[in-house]
Image (cartoon, rainbow, N blue to C red; front, side, top):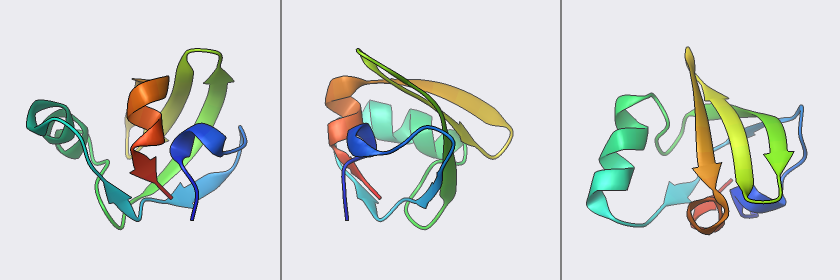
Length: 70
């Protein structure tokens, strides 16, 4: 298991668990990013990652990406 911030671009991963502020977690869950879902890392940036979850593309900052384990 690794943090989302440690993943490789172009690969798909299953979200194992997430923790953080409830508002942030609700935002992600509303966009089909939750425990058990598959996300694809589109691009890695110095300040975070861009992932595709369902039909959504989501930019996630580095601090939040460290709190999402895949």
